[in-house]
Length: 286
Image (cartoon, rainbow, N blue to C red; front, side, top):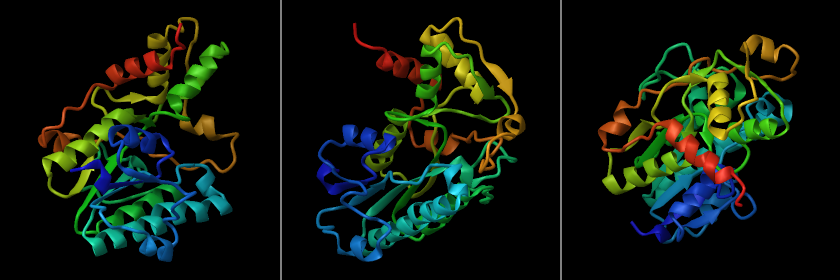
């Protein structure tokens, strides 16, 4: 399918930037030019020629969503706006591609399958779960659930690198488990589902490789990044959260069963491979 028939919503975020690189001729919009939370605005947009809507927009401040202002913003972006996109996609016969999260589950049953019942813990997870429900009302949809996303912009890897460059040895949560998902792997999944004409529905997508804790991931970042003097101290979620207000509950286990997406023929890379490439890209040029 020609890129020009694709609309990328949420073009400025980590995922949106990656999608633009892969689909350079796609139309790309963000909040400054397209308000997906406004029903009339979405209905009135010029949809001529658009066959695929890729929604990379979301409210992702997990702790901020627990505040009075954040709760409203999370529901507007993650539920109301998604509902508007699902409605217009159904109306014009377009395919809607939307991204969800392991936060739609409580993390007690794992690995997560595509058919696991929704069980969100906090406001962010609840708003994302609502988005999952409304996406399913669009006849032609791919709902991609993912976790621990890393791309251009603010993310865990960059946070750890910033600490290492300052000589700070951090305390990192050691009882939340999952796999990182690099934006390149997510974009590969989007392209693959479109080109393969895969069956519509829900797909779990992350990088493959070992399931690790955030603390384990931090150690791998420092190891591959050459920061030999930086040490990671394990800390429990309970202790980490004890002195922080408005901390959202988080699923303890975020790992996905990846059998459905791999059965379509998509090769999922080991996250350590993508982490190594990402760290190389972050090193300043000589």
